Length: 605
Ligand code: GLN
Image: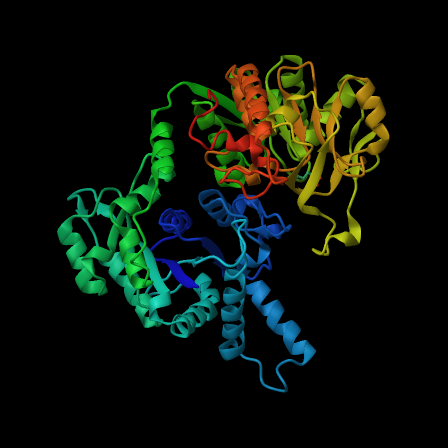
């Protein structure tokens, strides 16, 4: 196993995660199998309990792990499926060490940060790096490790938490040997506007900080507005002791898919592969990346999607939803325009409290081609979300409700069509007379210890002649990721279905409702799961693709082309009885439809 450690300096928010993922993409394009580990030095065991407002979205993995959003970057860029062990936190490490201590594994020794915590970190890294994540058997060739936080000469309080990890990584670099370890330091080269000079001091300081802690960078990836001048590179090389050919600029680009191309064009792979004794590998093939990055720049016909949510001030709170919308828009060759509609502003009360905001929210909603209500917890803005679902239903506007978004669509239907005025979720009104969404924990079956239904679960299509089944490629079942406690009340299904709301997808017991549709509406879909987590560039998630295609008038054509291609795919479905899979597929049968878009043909194929 070879390791690429990515650290960051000067300021946070440099795009370290995107840089680390992009390094992975370039190495993968050279023919290597790549996995990744994200280290978050905070004390939380996982990101599940952190506010999306403060920390961005919680990314959910197949195994139910609740992780930092950077794991989403890795999954999307590298088209892999990570596990909860690929996200290391201080909380997890200390829990592990303390459990060992309680079991008596340390044989009466004094348990200390060095060596016990640092050993635990190294063992964890080695173990997690070996987990296959790309659908192939056996471990990957290279593991990209991203260390969260920043490193500088002067420390702030937050950096104290990073210390055990830095010490562990110093030891680790010796343990695996020089030909198996490459350290890439991502830093900032600011420009002072008055003179336009690229300043190297901040980078020099952070590299000194890194060296003082025992880590010497092999490669410098410098974030800057423009490419670095040669003399600036020379200066950095001299003061940071990194060869000029190992210094790269990650200058501002029009979209993040250009970052792997920037690295390739500056021969970053050469520098990294040389350090890892892998120079015999060929040049990276990034044709598809290049085509997609360039296509994205040229799109001009807009598709306007209103996201009616709670955290509309911070797009990182809905990062995967945004990415899934982007993947779908690129497949439809449209430029994605997102309108953030604060759900609460749609409510009637706001017309009096804040008429301007109320008017603005309604204008955005009415001007949108499609409406998306994402997942969420707590009752703030719920009424506004219900109003948005009602507006979409009554005005034939394409609608996708995700998790809470599906639940509010059910509440709205029960109130408007079944005339159950107080219909509600017991999450918001525990005593409601008409509980159409109720608490349905999986209980002890989840090993998370909590009551949340988390991770990958199977949905079976009960109705085949529906848009969702077609979008998923007419498969019998799909696996998608979940994160919720409440579900549509099984006791009210008959009533809702008789009134025209169809539950086209259910779990294996038939008691848990997974996908709803209004069959007569142009596109009104609700999903109890979070399809956004499995969307990939070039392989958009089916419900998102449906929403965007419907929003730009392409859904009919898309469904038609899907059923034709599906017939084509059916013909060569099996070789010797084994399902034939597209080379981009990891073995998910729901990806067959996605594969149609991974050949660069777009929806017009
Ligand atoms: N709050 C709802 C539940 O727990 C929805 C959760 C979500 O949207 N992720 O079921």
